[in-house]
Length: 246
Image 1 (cartoon, helix red, strand yellow):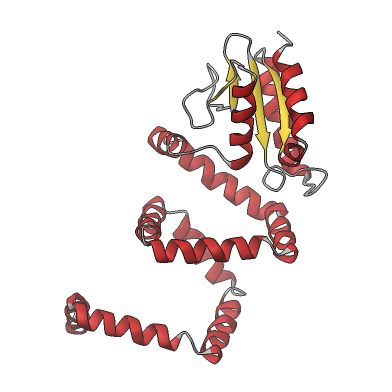
Image 2 (tube, rainbow, N blue to C red):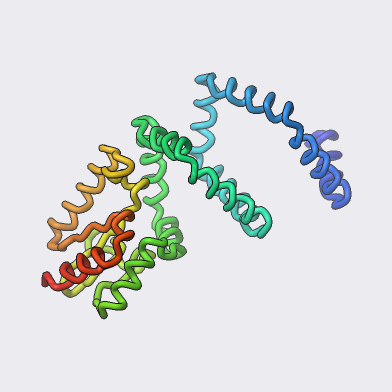
């Protein structure tokens, strides 16, 4: 380590100097002109094929992803940071233009193939798969289905947290009745390409492929789309009829 790096490290270990540096940095980023220049420079840099290649190589390195995930986890433990980020995300996702932009990004074949490749690499690690699944809690739509099933005294159980995999596969359904071989899959409109709100041929093919795999294994499958939950009486009747099929 050179002398300059050692001096910087020494300054950063001093809490007062560290706090002063953070304050100065925060004040700098409050300058609209600085933000604009930084944004323009960043956009220009991403036009370079070499910059994109370097970024791809960085994120394909598992150690780098783990390191960044660790930093993100530490930040998320800060209540003030978490509250601010949550509010900003809600604001972004309430903007129709942003939703449409993200739909187009996710529909890009290059983006989807890259994301799929990286995801498959991660999920080949049993520890990663177990960690991700077992820390998962029911989503809002899934919780509504849980409440409906309880009211019907159904034997269909929530297993979307990874507590159950279809025998002989790595498929983790949202709800299952092992004895009757019934499966309920709750699909979010945006993430699964709902034809009514966010049509996406690629996602719809993935949905169909998953359903067909379950059917070949002898399961009856009920698909519940997020938008269907707005009609409570109708979805209750739909689930009740499905539960009586076997």
